[in-house]
Length: 172
Image (tube, rainbow, N blue to C red; front, top):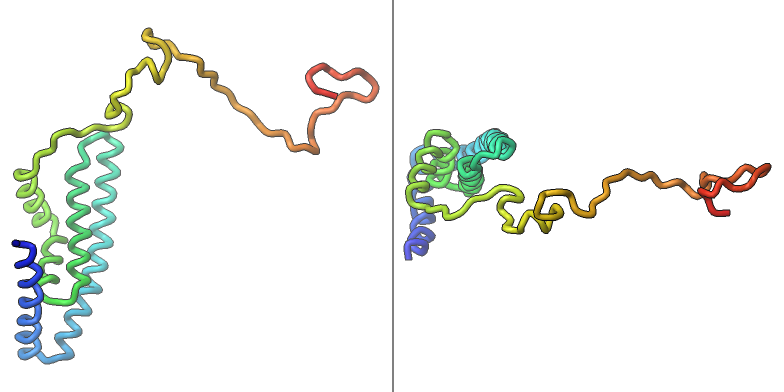
Protein backbone atom coordinates (compact mmCIF):
# COMPACT_ATOMS: atom_id res chain seq x y z
CA UNK A 1 0.00 0.00 0.00
CA UNK A 2 2.79 2.42 0.91
CA UNK A 3 4.44 1.79 -2.47
CA UNK A 4 1.22 2.83 -4.23
CA UNK A 5 1.09 6.01 -2.15
CA UNK A 6 4.73 6.72 -3.01
CA UNK A 7 4.15 6.28 -6.76
CA UNK A 8 1.16 8.57 -6.50
CA UNK A 9 2.69 11.22 -4.23
CA UNK A 10 6.06 11.74 -5.98
CA UNK A 11 4.64 12.87 -9.35
CA UNK A 12 2.13 15.14 -7.61
CA UNK A 13 4.94 16.71 -5.56
CA UNK A 14 7.07 17.13 -8.70
CA UNK A 15 4.25 18.77 -10.66
CA UNK A 16 3.49 21.14 -7.79
CA UNK A 17 7.17 22.10 -7.48
CA UNK A 18 7.48 22.66 -11.24
CA UNK A 19 4.46 24.98 -11.17
CA UNK A 20 5.74 26.91 -8.13
CA UNK A 21 9.35 27.28 -9.32
CA UNK A 22 8.27 28.01 -12.89
CA UNK A 23 5.96 30.74 -11.56
CA UNK A 24 8.78 32.31 -9.55
CA UNK A 25 11.64 32.21 -12.06
CA UNK A 26 10.01 31.38 -15.40
CA UNK A 27 9.99 28.41 -17.76
CA UNK A 28 13.51 28.53 -19.26
CA UNK A 29 15.41 28.99 -16.00
CA UNK A 30 13.37 26.15 -14.50
CA UNK A 31 14.27 23.83 -17.38
CA UNK A 32 17.91 24.95 -17.18
CA UNK A 33 18.02 24.05 -13.48
CA UNK A 34 16.59 20.58 -14.21
CA UNK A 35 19.17 19.99 -16.97
CA UNK A 36 22.06 21.31 -14.87
CA UNK A 37 21.16 19.10 -11.91
CA UNK A 38 21.11 16.09 -14.22
CA UNK A 39 24.59 16.97 -15.55
CA UNK A 40 25.96 17.73 -12.08
CA UNK A 41 24.36 14.58 -10.72
CA UNK A 42 25.90 12.43 -13.44
CA UNK A 43 29.36 13.80 -12.62
CA UNK A 44 28.85 13.32 -8.88
CA UNK A 45 27.54 9.78 -9.35
CA UNK A 46 30.60 8.94 -11.45
CA UNK A 47 33.09 10.29 -8.89
CA UNK A 48 31.28 8.94 -5.83
CA UNK A 49 30.72 5.61 -7.57
CA UNK A 50 34.43 5.27 -8.35
CA UNK A 51 35.22 5.93 -4.70
CA UNK A 52 32.66 3.35 -3.54
CA UNK A 53 34.05 0.82 -6.02
CA UNK A 54 37.58 1.39 -4.69
CA UNK A 55 36.34 0.88 -1.13
CA UNK A 56 34.55 -2.32 -2.16
CA UNK A 57 37.67 -3.60 -3.90
CA UNK A 58 39.74 -2.76 -0.83
CA UNK A 59 37.39 -4.61 1.52
CA UNK A 60 37.40 -7.67 -0.75
CA UNK A 61 41.21 -7.69 -0.97
CA UNK A 62 41.49 -7.48 2.81
CA UNK A 63 38.72 -10.10 3.29
CA UNK A 64 36.59 -7.67 5.28
CA UNK A 65 32.81 -7.51 5.29
CA UNK A 66 31.81 -5.70 2.04
CA UNK A 67 28.32 -4.80 3.28
CA UNK A 68 28.98 -1.10 3.86
CA UNK A 69 30.71 -0.40 0.50
CA UNK A 70 28.00 -2.40 -1.30
CA UNK A 71 25.27 -0.42 0.46
CA UNK A 72 26.98 2.87 -0.39
CA UNK A 73 27.33 1.76 -4.01
CA UNK A 74 23.65 0.85 -4.16
CA UNK A 75 22.67 4.21 -2.68
CA UNK A 76 24.88 6.03 -5.21
CA UNK A 77 23.23 4.08 -8.02
CA UNK A 78 19.80 4.96 -6.65
CA UNK A 79 20.88 8.61 -6.34
CA UNK A 80 21.88 8.56 -10.01
CA UNK A 81 18.44 7.27 -10.99
CA UNK A 82 16.80 10.00 -8.90
CA UNK A 83 18.99 12.70 -10.47
CA UNK A 84 18.18 11.55 -14.00
CA UNK A 85 14.46 11.71 -13.19
CA UNK A 86 13.30 15.24 -14.02
CA UNK A 87 12.06 17.10 -10.99
CA UNK A 88 13.15 19.11 -7.98
CA UNK A 89 12.04 16.67 -5.30
CA UNK A 90 13.85 13.68 -6.82
CA UNK A 91 16.93 15.86 -7.52
CA UNK A 92 17.00 16.94 -3.88
CA UNK A 93 16.78 13.33 -2.68
CA UNK A 94 19.42 12.23 -5.19
CA UNK A 95 21.85 14.98 -4.25
CA UNK A 96 21.30 14.22 -0.56
CA UNK A 97 22.21 10.56 -1.15
CA UNK A 98 25.48 11.64 -2.77
CA UNK A 99 26.62 13.30 0.47
CA UNK A 100 28.68 10.68 2.39
CA UNK A 101 27.37 11.58 5.89
CA UNK A 102 23.78 11.28 4.64
CA UNK A 103 24.58 7.89 3.09
CA UNK A 104 26.20 6.80 6.35
CA UNK A 105 23.10 7.83 8.32
CA UNK A 106 20.85 5.92 5.91
CA UNK A 107 23.18 2.91 6.16
CA UNK A 108 23.06 2.97 9.97
CA UNK A 109 19.26 3.29 9.89
CA UNK A 110 18.95 0.31 7.54
CA UNK A 111 21.57 -1.75 9.38
CA UNK A 112 19.50 -1.63 12.57
CA UNK A 113 16.50 -3.02 10.69
CA UNK A 114 18.13 -5.70 8.49
CA UNK A 115 19.38 -8.95 10.01
CA UNK A 116 22.12 -10.83 8.11
CA UNK A 117 21.97 -14.53 8.91
CA UNK A 118 25.11 -15.79 7.19
CA UNK A 119 28.14 -14.40 5.43
CA UNK A 120 31.05 -16.27 3.87
CA UNK A 121 34.06 -15.80 1.62
CA UNK A 122 35.65 -18.08 -0.97
CA UNK A 123 35.93 -21.84 -0.49
CA UNK A 124 35.13 -21.65 3.23
CA UNK A 125 31.55 -20.89 2.26
CA UNK A 126 31.31 -24.21 0.41
CA UNK A 127 30.51 -27.03 2.81
CA UNK A 128 32.47 -29.63 0.89
CA UNK A 129 34.80 -31.88 2.94
CA UNK A 130 38.48 -31.08 2.56
CA UNK A 131 39.48 -34.61 1.63
CA UNK A 132 37.27 -34.78 -1.47
CA UNK A 133 38.96 -31.75 -3.00
CA UNK A 134 42.56 -32.20 -1.93
CA UNK A 135 43.26 -35.88 -1.48
CA UNK A 136 43.09 -38.12 1.54
CA UNK A 137 42.07 -37.34 5.10
CA UNK A 138 45.72 -36.83 6.09
CA UNK A 139 45.81 -33.70 3.87
CA UNK A 140 48.28 -35.14 1.38
CA UNK A 141 47.64 -34.20 -2.22
CA UNK A 142 45.59 -36.66 -4.25
CA UNK A 143 46.30 -37.75 -7.82
CA UNK A 144 47.16 -34.27 -9.07
CA UNK A 145 50.21 -33.78 -11.23
CA UNK A 146 51.27 -30.23 -11.90
CA UNK A 147 53.11 -29.55 -15.12
CA UNK A 148 53.64 -27.21 -18.04
CA UNK A 149 53.39 -27.93 -21.74
CA UNK A 150 53.97 -26.24 -25.04
CA UNK A 151 52.42 -27.16 -28.38
CA UNK A 152 54.85 -27.81 -31.16
CA UNK A 153 53.62 -26.56 -34.52
CA UNK A 154 53.36 -29.28 -37.23
CA UNK A 155 56.13 -27.78 -39.36
CA UNK A 156 58.59 -27.91 -36.45
CA UNK A 157 58.00 -31.45 -35.15
CA UNK A 158 61.20 -33.17 -34.11
CA UNK A 159 62.69 -35.48 -36.69
CA UNK A 160 65.52 -37.94 -36.56
CA UNK A 161 68.92 -37.39 -38.07
CA UNK A 162 68.88 -38.82 -41.63
CA UNK A 163 72.34 -40.35 -41.02
CA UNK A 164 71.29 -42.30 -37.92
CA UNK A 165 68.36 -44.22 -36.43
CA UNK A 166 65.52 -42.39 -34.67
CA UNK A 167 66.15 -41.54 -31.03
CA UNK A 168 63.14 -43.49 -29.77
CA UNK A 169 61.47 -40.35 -28.50
CA UNK A 170 59.76 -39.61 -31.77
CA UNK A 171 57.72 -41.81 -34.03
CA UNK A 172 58.90 -42.29 -37.52
